[in-house]
Image (cartoon, rainbow, N blue to C red):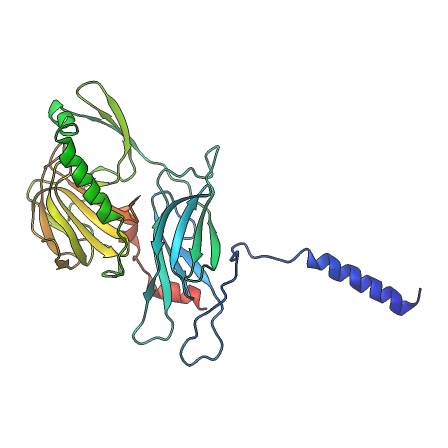
Length: 335
């Protein structure tokens, strides 16, 4: 065989082998977005890119998804089943050219992590208005939750069974509020704590056993944080937002719910009295009510809760970091 013929054969073999072994990054879009935004002053569209914060969330933690291209909604998938979805909203800067889209979803606190015998497969799906999608796999960090038992009096046991129709109506209204995803962003920064006291009587995600007076044992997951404080203690809004509920309820007592961003709500239960009115815009740290022991309560305390697209969310996560960390996202997304 001539030398040129041998080189041709060798080249063909090499090219054929390489074609089946294309290197793929650890996190890569399943389908490349067909359109990318054009930054004013730039001729070339920005290559689609995304980040998630934190990169390895724990059960119960919210995750911020940021993309530098057009995006419509984000879906949270657990073992190939959709557990939540939300919309993206634009984050803009007055004096900067770099803008992005953001969405927030929470990893359910019931998700099985890598240390279990059957860890869950968790990933986000992002799509735009044209139906173009890509997938972001997520590694869930391990987390331990406490266990606790509550001894309930006959009065508290009866509270959960009395006035059934009213309770169902209140539950339906609550679900309607928490499942509503608006288009307003009232708060970007970290949350402030709702009280000055540091005494906590129950933690987020605690596995509870409610021991009823009639002998029944009912298990549940505690959706928020309880602060043991005297009746009449001032309660503050965690962040700027719209008061979407401020009224007495059978189980949660005097209650306030504030909307902070699309699908993101902070909740304050068992108040002695409410101050903030429905429809009002409140600022972070503003007094919205006084603590108490109304409704299904074993003593004076504040139940503080955060919901993200209806999912129970660790409220301390938004105290430790901003809802939208603009500077961090810009530094990672565009550099």
